[in-house]
Length: 150
Image (cartoon, rainbow, N blue to C red):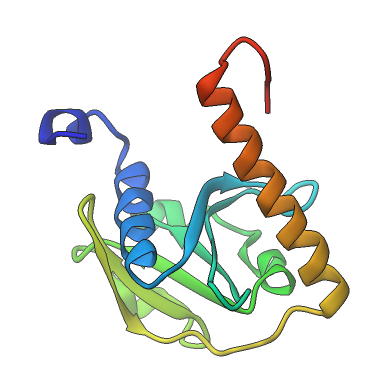
């Protein structure tokens, strides 16, 4: 994606791209716009080589953050929870008991590590399987757009 194409993305999508690139550099596989359970849709979910699950919510503005009343529902679905924001975001409003990532369309950096709260074993297995199937179906959908819908 060139600079012109990147400029066509919404601010939150640019954050997702930078976060996904950074996590790839840490060895994670990521999926954007993933549904771990009915009624939940996370911006980025990452799966580490050891099976650790991170959820990252990308907030492009204070209004976007204040309008997100469901983020605590994501906590049982990950080992670590992070906010990803740009450098202009007022970081002091973000809960201190969560991780913080500074991001843009090109990359990201973990500024505050999130506490580790392990996902229950049965949920981890189900979520990892759902992650794998979702990633495979997205890839298949790219190869044959008329053959599948997510």
